Length: 321
Image 1 (cartoon, rainbow, N blue to C red):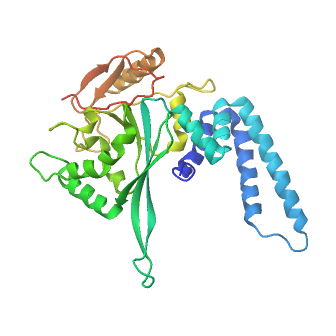
Image 2: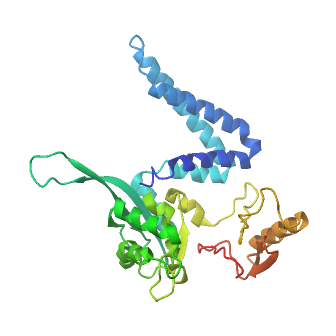
Image 3: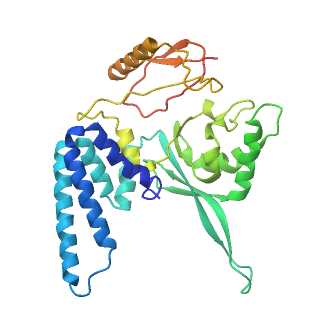
């Protein structure tokens, strides 16, 4: 699962690395050319007349690719990390992931798959159904596999919830979803303050944080920090929390109370205010101090104390009301 989920995004991370280091573009270009040639040669059938020539070319290109990757790793720390992760086997990837997750954090990785329904008798056609399972990954326990049942009934509950978005007085599919999803996950999440949630299937259309809480009138977001993680295999890099010395530090952009009904291109916040906001945010991240939150549609500002780049907690983007 770690290899397949978000595999395209993981590969695209190399493209983003290249953009951050334009001085290394010649090496990246040469690596891409060699990689393309190696892929085409590996997929092509051998020449019956000279079968040994194909193997020799594959070995030569592989050696050239390793040499280029070694050069990039020596000059670019982030590339070296990405390369190391890509070379790990499944068990090594899982161990690295578990080592990166703090004890108070749990990863819930969902997977929708085809299930072969056992036949009631020896005759009759084979039946298949889409089902949903969850894998709970924690640093201090074995991976837990939790069956959530057929996808169809979960999808119906999600569609029903989306008609009213859990508004009071409406039908209450949220409670049914809590029973179907959260109640089954909860025993494996004991002591976890933050849930890293990687959805699949119909749960991609449902915000887990909007589930009803344990008390009447409450929501799950009031009890746990919920963070959506589309690509779990990139978690070790994300949770490392160490800024790269190879390029500029990343600056988070936090936006709340967006006026989705306004005309495209119209911004109520002055350009000078935007520049000042970016500079304050950048300084706050570097100093692990306060961070400004701007709410453009109402022109108001709030400040969040104690923002620390090194922590793995979630960032809550809320409205000022």
